[in-house]
Image 1 (cartoon, one colour):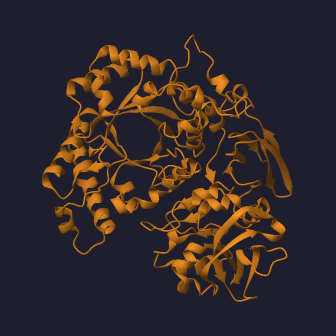
Image 2: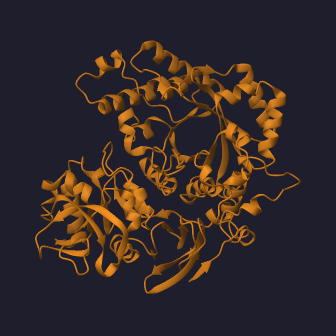
Image 3: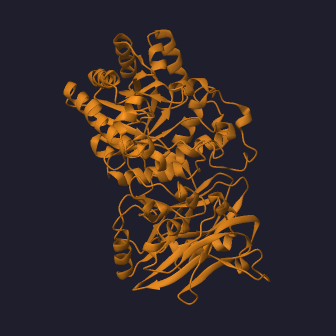
Length: 585
């Protein structure tokens, strides 16, 4: 058992060629908006911009958009662009963005108006005539609440109405229409990064992956303090979740330059996290950004110069006489560097968390858990092959949930409830443990596990003493204090165990839990995994079925971690915002 430090030269000789393109482990593509495709009618503009991109990175495929914001690219321009890229050895595919005005709060077409439905169909037909493979950008959803939609909705909730509405539109107006024109066309829907809220605007993860020929995955997590508050780990986690929706039909991940103001490392990190999830392709959004986002010295982070996985000075070295100038160089450098690492990885594994379709609650929690060293594997069906199943509030709508939990416990498995699920369906869970949430309290002291650096507001869990037991407790203070509250609670049932995991009101407060408490939680939840880590928060582990793990730090400073495999312990020193590939055989 040994630690494998990243070496590009060595890794290149270890792995067979998987793709016929420019990379061993995946394809790299560029998505191009209709605005930029339209400019390709100018041969000089096309030649010069492509030189800017292709001199700084390798590209296997390009997506040329036919429509966005009611703009339709003329046939003559499409013909010229297709001819140009094919001449340069780049595979050419199509794209559609179904917006009326993206700048007007993402104004979509109205799918109850016949004129809009006809337009949607015409765009699909036009695109299918030009391409054998095309992808729908983020916006094949609906946000219209006009009088026509209100009348059509009737007594249904908005999400019930929109799910049916958009599934029908996808089938009839897009897929069927396209295949009538071009029977060989492949129609892909790209789902964005806000998956826990999809049902509100009509994205149907239950049926959509089967209506369309496949899906793509938005892995652009950008900056966590943005209005979506997406955690870094989602760039990995969402790929594995969408893989499970219809196995074998997730075409790849999709990243833009959002968040680069936090540092070039933040952009690079999104790229390699997407690839750590074994995405077969990554699409860079978009052509405009790759030519227009200049390399800015202000995005060189303070921790550079310490041998980090993204090395600014190495990236800035001219190559073949070409000086780095734009985002294309950052992308090209990063993807070439991680390619041989990804080629060594097997299938991702994680702690299985069941997420029922179209269910809100504990939104995006798994991404926060991933950031505290709990490798996640979200599935749309209750697993029957796991020693431990994590159930968040996202499982509450399953009418057979109690039967499934009972079966898991009878076969000797464990079930971990979050306090979110406990608050949502206390009567159903009372069959397994009579526990309840009775209020909220502040804590800052985890006793023998250590103290926090701030007060944390948590749900107060009530239980019957000796029917269930506190594994981890917290108080304010706990040590020398008078009150304590469960952080992790355990009870027996049949041949298994029930655990209640207390999740703070602000999920990011998980990052302030003491390291020793995190280590205990990782031990309980990680029974199905071969390896686990002992480390502070903001350190993640990615495990694969071929005895490889990646440990990544999202911290701004050097930190230490330990990979635990049975009775063996592998120490790891992690540079800021860097990763290590480790062989755990």
